[in-house]
Image (cartoon, rainbow, N blue to C red; front, side, top):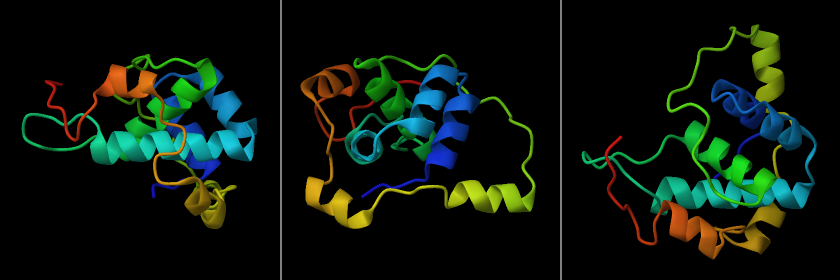
Length: 134
């Protein structure tokens, strides 16, 4: 099961110029954040791949999943490529890396792709590794 911290998810969203979902992700309910992780998990392991077979990057999957949960409908990110954010101090980097990660037992109870809907499957593909040009 894919898991991340809220601090890292917020940073991923900001790198794709998604400030509103970033604000939401910092304060959403634990259940909503578990859904973000579930949708991101599906995007990484069952979602689209490049013609070379490479899967989606975690940062992009997390950002897409958070945008979907925040807005209630899937869409592409504001940017195709991440912009470089200011470098963090080692202390700040450690802090956000462990900032409110989801409870593993709760995540396990809800299942691997918790939060995945038909809209997610329709927008990002039904099957394992639908190939797309990027």
